[in-house]
Length: 204
Image 1 (cartoon, helix red, strand yellow):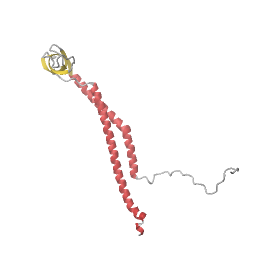
Image 2: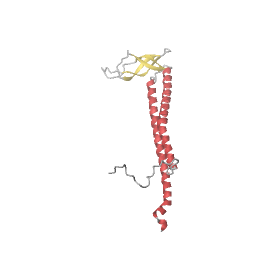
Image 3: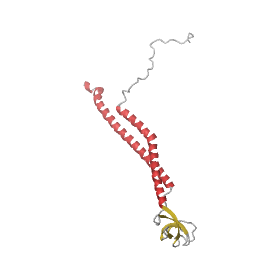
Image 4: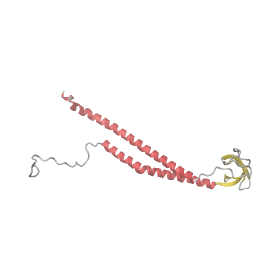
């Protein structure tokens, strides 16, 4: 055991670790740089482009459907009508299932009308029902509701998001395949130059 401190080791000092040289990597080819930029673009599309496109499309679809709701609501209104005959339905049934039945009503101009409307299934000819008519006094379907516009907005937004994601993944896959084909072609051309000298065929 050495009591005079650590034993001195003679010989050259080990080389210090050098920092990596700055500048372009000579092993990084143009196809690698293109693939890196495509990956960055792909990430930006998923992070920023996809939500923006989905929200914009959803709001546009909702606004368009709300204009339809407003137009239908202004062009249609409800009036009171009476059943022309008993609404068809199961006998002794307490369930008011919607059914088609003939109704009669008086339009705003005083003219009497008859037609087929959707009413509860257990009424008789004395019952009064509410039906929707247009400006001409003819029977019409109920106008669309705001909930329909919200559903349309969500549906359009989801479809847009799925479409953008599918296009982004498809584009990324195609670019990668094209870059790989270019790499393989270049590697094959370089190998035809290097292989004879590496295998020693030129020394024969």
